[in-house]
Image 1 (cartoon, rainbow, N blue to C red):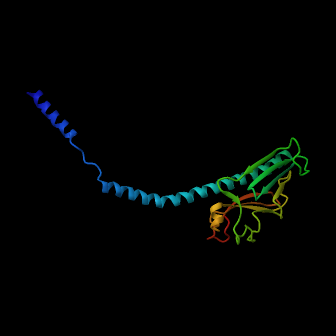
Image 2 (cartoon, rainbow, N blue to C red):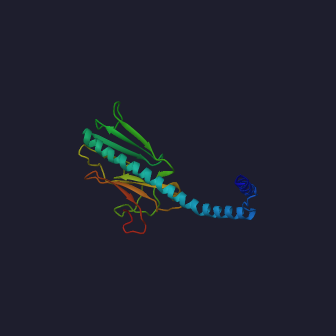
Image 3 (cartoon, one colour):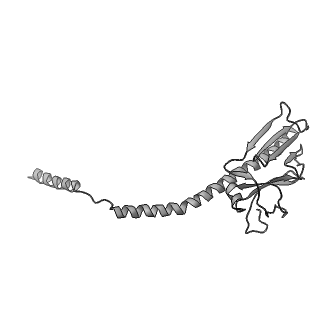
Length: 203
């Protein structure tokens, strides 16, 4: 008798499981897709801006650390190290000029690097540098695109390089501008972020 009762209960449970289950209606599915579409439309521009900011930070930090390394190498190896920027090709070279002749001789180390991810050596008209002078070139060290570090770590001239994302050049926006400066007397290399709402804007 008990076995029979269990069998009937089991059968009822099985019938319950076999009943057609309600799913999403077409209207419900369309509503969910519409909400997802709205969320994506809102999130995509924000993600794009975050990605571009991450890209320019990464490239500016690369230039900063390479300039720091150039200065350190000059002191460590007791010779001249030249860093030359090409603002047309958005590249730069670091030349360990052991005999200080300005020529890349055999045996001398030369490192070449290029900006990536749509980052350029560039500036927008009207921007000022850390000394509040109007910027006239994307890379300038006493009017030259080359800065030289000597064995004491001093630089040939004070100056800066400026970096912008391609989209910020097109939109003439400085919100994500980055700059790396070099001080002649000490050879100190500094990393700067632009903030148009602050005075001075570089921090």
